[in-house]
Length: 531
Image (cartoon, rainbow, N blue to C red; front, side):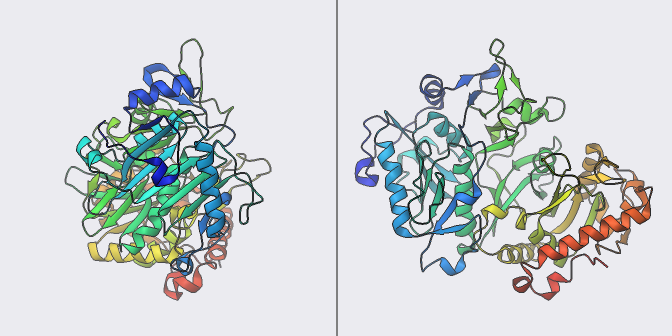
């Protein structure tokens, strides 16, 4: 790649002699193997080890307090304060560490495919695997754009191989990921998990976008042959990535998007998929993409002799991950932009088995369920979990929110009203009983429901009001069995269904109390009625 030289010493105080700025990805692969413990596996992908941390450290995230932004920020456990002086100490600590390293990697790229709203980003890191990861995940500039890149809007200093100092004020452990919203910087210490870079930038965009009067969203998106766009919101395990990777539609993106007056655009140039239990039969597109050259797989196990990855092996972590370029997905839409969404699908995996497979949401219900961000942990996945546990992550992306959740919900409602979008709640969880009694919703049935949303037939179907959740539930679907649509009718014991539904409705109501004062009575009233 062609890029002008930059003086890291005058810009950031980095004096390392060997600086690799925007090297070819082939060079990053070479360095990952030579200097970083990386291994090339079957079909050409690089397998790397993220060290002690195999996932994000949300309680170690800090945001610099500043009079310009302090009153805007939703302060909480996974978005805590750090004073400016402590941030500066962290920044200097990362740079001091970089100055001891034999080489530094600098990757320039964009967050966002829409040139009107995208942000210029610079990654400064010490591990070639981190540089390759961000080369894949950022929107990659052309050679001409690199020559005229100029000063970035945001700089990430990844000194994650070096631990933070818990004796520094507002730093509570040897891991600290701190964001300076006003200065456009973030500093990573004490974690080598590559996802911290990606999600730190997304968090920054969740703040910047509101100031730009556009909506930043934790969702996937795809487009039909007629140009119709659908958004898919959902927490891990609900099927967001799987359902958006539809062979009949073009993928716009699998994780992060913005909704602007122009339509939507993907923030990223790559996808970052969970790999545990991945197979060619279950998810062929992702399976093929993550194995290709320049793709990066984290913390997976492989056969030393054949170099074949064992995607079922969770001995390092269940959170095995793969990063691959979005154009590795056949039929992906490049550039990754689309029109205003016609359908907004909110996915949940209800392990209680009481929510319907699909429900049509009013605007108020859409705001309520968006703020709630419900799914359920399955019993048996964690020590001591004896039954399903409700999990609520506001706006389906709680750890990445900066403003209070109703701010994003109001944005969603305004966008949907302006462009006539229809919201749906789709349950990919259990039917006929909760976990251990009923069965997981068939993927083919869920895909049939999504097909009926896309072809418009479900919007015209007759509905029945759910007495507990207040949802309009279709009673007919052209592409799925009608008998699965009303959940109470799938249970052998209707009284047991009523008890389980009432319990979940009460959990919804209890969770929503945290947002009720800012959300307003009309939205609160759109939730379920426990009694």
